[in-house]
Image (cartoon, rainbow, N blue to C red; front, side, top):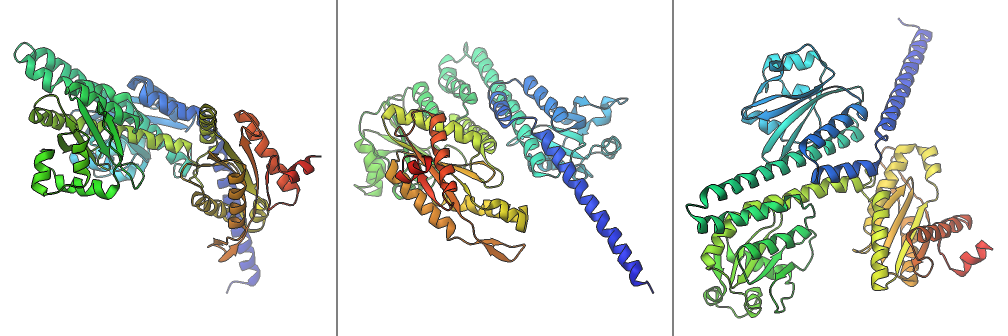
Length: 551
């Protein structure tokens, strides 16, 4: 039987080993984060914007390869490009003494479905049985353990295999790698659209001598729609698409009604060549008409009204505005739309051309939405899901410019937690992170629809309040201070509720400052004095109490 001393010694050794492993893991992840931070957020976002919109495939692929090597410490890289029915070697780094055929993979539908699951990196083991055993064995022998695909919707363009000295399971590694993959996918997809444009252009040239009128009416509109592929704003691209549709199909008057991204009560309306008033309908009226129209081509509005025996509703409003025909014309798989028009060619010809344009417009809008989702990731704080410091500065400049242009006021509030350090020291950083996450949820539910809230860094947050003066700012600070101080923050790991308080400082444009830097300084000084005067307090920059504290 083991002695008590032996058991105690073994336990001590075990604890020492666990502590050593924990320290090693912390240092390793710290080193990894330090390396990842070499790429500043601004530089990374600019890379996504420039290369997803303007860069050629060669430029984007070259930048992605550089980042894999320099930022993500990839010692070995292989990229297999899809060429017809095979994935074939297109780029490699860190390997030698091989034949290109060693990496040739037969492309199949099951493999395509597996690769199109996610942009996130996956373990090489997931491909066992999906690719030939010799190729799988070669990749394994070379130490490749992670792969990630390059795809857009149903189009798979290739797959990367990497071997990194980093810990590949961390969220920061996965998020950055997925963003690089999405950026390269966007470049490939733009090239794909442009190749479609070239093919259509060639079709115009080859057929113009045989049927010039038919080619002009059915192919040329598609050409001009595809020219919009590099527009990346899903809101402004709607107006560009409808403008192009109206111009190419010679439609005199058009109204486009479509669902907003947010679940608003009102539906968006875009008009082209329509002088009559057409108010944004409520969602109920819009949904009712959309269901009545169904999927069967276009409808003559007069005949529709007679058939439905109605003299009210959205369809009647469209008629009053001078529109004669209406059809379903969705923006994307998630946003429906109705197109109403009058004038121009035969409605049957216009309806047929709209049918030809529909898949192109769906692609354009969904491409823009996908790009915006990636750009939003670069603007989002991963812990709280609030906007980050970079987005805060961008929007503050924009909102001050707008306030200046329309001669309106704007409030800026900066606040931080009074006792986060105490919580971290007493309960651990996990407890502090839990409170910051919960704080983000409270903040999102406390602001107006037009307000912008961001995590500035650490435990410091900012709120931009357009069209808010001193009274509105003080009311909000008071309400938020009371809401936070009265909240209980559940820490599941501790099975305990914690409480915390915040201190807030506010400043108003143009009352206290006439530019961005001065406004931030004024709000920051108000916060400083609020903390110096006892914490759990809010102050506006020119409050009498604030002025006394400055003396």
